[in-house]
Length: 69
Image 1 (cartoon, rainbow, N blue to C red):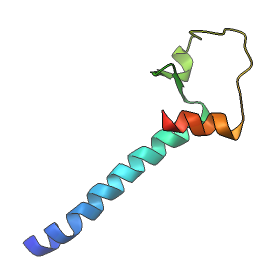
Image 2 (tube, rainbow, N blue to C red):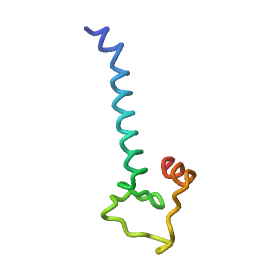
Image 3 (cartoon, one colour):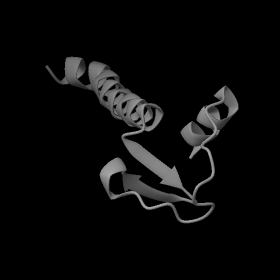
């Protein structure tokens, strides 16, 4: 039993970590979580901090930058 746990435990930990990361990336790309100037905010509580009224960039580069956080 110990051998099985030690052999496969890292796989389950990695799977959990990947699920959490993909969930965060999905929420950022869908606009459910907004990251602006290093501050995370739920989309309902978002108030623009700078550049109010400026059109948001929807380019692939902007989305990639958001995922880098």
